[in-house]
Length: 212
Image (cartoon, rainbow, N blue to C red; front, side, top):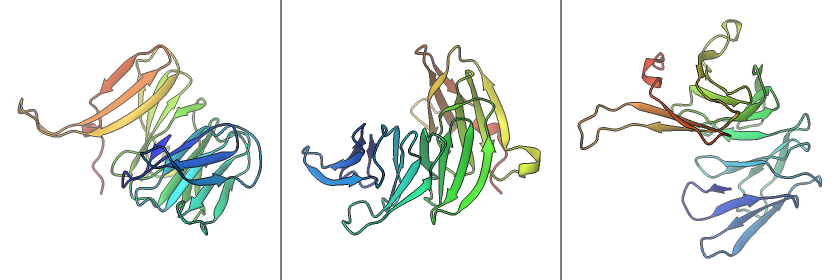
């Protein structure tokens, strides 16, 4: 499930080879059918501008639809194999990350592959930080890794290794903090959850190097 940036519709996918776009009255406004049949849709993501919709389709790889509301919009296959489990857009919409097991591939929004990296364990969750510089991996080995995509690949992208979960990490979310009624200073918070139902709040991103 995903919601369009303008809040006008939501997208759902299941095991019948189609992504359906619904308005908030529950009516189907568009159905996107992948060119190859088979396998459950595992994750959907939509770009911030709403002009691209990416889908991880398990053993059938990952696809991107251009202008998903337009009947003339085209579909492109990003990867065929191995299994595509997760997909997400950078906040600026210029990068698409696809996880397939332990393998991370990052593409430009023009579908050119920019890089490939390997996680220490199969990736179970994968969001970009709001600046687009950082990408988090939640893995089956109970560990969360924060990648700095501006680092040289020769020195490893992994900037932080966070341990504290007791089961496979199943979800990650970033939040940009703000001052509130208790006069706390703005901070960056990072949340992760695992399959044992444990939720951890990390207050660590302010210790990362600032974008430069």
